[in-house]
Each structure stands twice: as structure tokens, then as C-alpha cells.
Length: 226
Image (cartoon, rainbow, N blue to C red; front, side, top):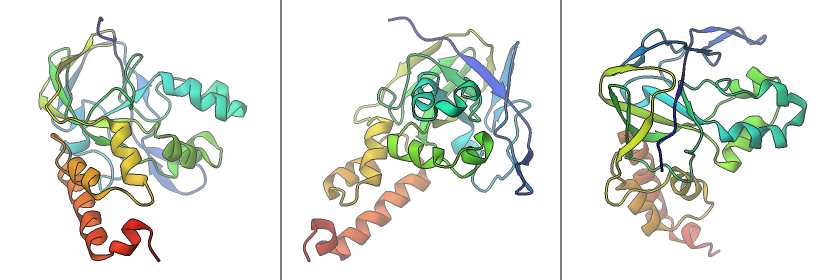
């Protein structure tokens, strides 16, 4: 199977709604090559570096197929649900949360990217589209998008192949990680396997291990006994 081709987006912060807060969720498609460095695409910026950007969340990918599914759920804004509009830097058709694994390594142009974690959607998505409930639906459906760390810097251009070059042993899909994390009474052995997933960010590994510690200290909650 041939690799999907890529579209690329960058943006800078602007005010969102009437909240008086900045967001860089608005991105513009690129027509030519761009350098992808350790902190992301040249010319891209984040409004709140506490929760966005940085080496472990340098590049945000959102599946092009997800937009049609969002439009089915929110037909009143179907015209606004176009590829590139949810704040991603990268979009493709042919890859989504059910087929991409944490730790997967992709080549695009001269850059080498590794999947590091799912995106955790926030209220700004609701504000961006002017519809309440989108974030909740994205969380519930697991159509969150995901982030990359940059293993090798390099230039990429729209239309370049986005090719999987390595999948580590023991890799788990983004969908499996998301489902297990949000399960009300997750299986401890399953969580332990997720914590050991190759390529997972230290922050997510800590979150999972903290939850494992809590489950071990609260066995009745873990099993549903009362």
C-alpha cells in the first residue's frame, strides 16, 4: 500500500470568541516547503506553552477522515468542518487513531517524526466552531488526533509521502490507549502494558503509573466491589 500524502498547516495566536484568551487553533495551509525542527514547524506558534507545543508535542496530526464523522454528528456546522480547521499541523487520509500506534516513526520529506501521545482536546474546540459538546464528543469517540516528537529535523512540503518506517515491538494503537485510559474500571495489567508502550511521553507514563498506584491502594474500586 502506498503512503498517504500530507497537507501542512501553521498559525499564530489570536483572540478566541469573547473569552479574551489567545489560541492558535486557526491554521493556514502551506503552499511550499517548511522546516520541521525539534519544536515544530517553522512559523507555527502556540498560545499557551504549558499545555501545547514543546519537544514532546512538536507536531499535531489530525486524520482527514475524522471531519466527515464530526459533520455527521454536528451537521449544523458541516461547512466549517474542513481539513486543517481543528488546529493540526499535519493532515492525511489513510491514517487514524485505530491504525496509528504510539511509538510509530514516520518519514515526511527530510524529517523523521515519532508518535508520542494522543491530543487531549480542550474547550477551545467548542469556541472555535461555536458549538457546545464537540469536545465531549471528540473525547467519547476517541477522534482526538495525536502528537509527534521530531527525531530528525528536515524540510517537508505539501504532497510529500507520509511513510511509516518503523513500528516498535509492543506498540499499542492510540485508540487502545485512549479507551483504556478512559475506562471507568480499567484492567491493571492492561494499564501496566500501556505504561510500558515504547515512545509514550514521560508525562503520560507518569499519569498511567499514578493511576496504577491508586488502583493498587483501592482494590475495591478497581474491581467494582462495594
